[in-house]
Image (cartoon, rainbow, N blue to C red; front, side):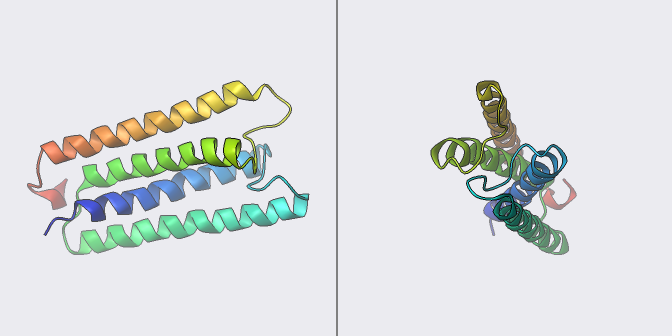
Length: 151
């Protein structure tokens, strides 16, 4: 049985949750740069942050449950899983930076500053994460499935 998609989706869910948690904890809570939804009152922004935080944990937990299942069945491939994490984190960050920031305009990375450099940095990091993930996935595919559980 081919488990490639299972490895990758587990990593993607975990990566999405990880980067969403980091975004929410650092940019929303610690730095107070924005809320998930900034087009309403502060109260609505805080509620939207709570929902975003819940989403990040649901995604993280889903990825970890899938990981636990793979480990239990001794089919875990570490490189594929880590590659999936990078792809998930990068795709989510790129989605956030392009769709949510620019198309939907539900929030920006930061306000009252020259936003171009923040956007550029945000999206370049997203693309780098995706590239790292794809490289890991390709390397794990080229090495085959031999001894996948010990990887």
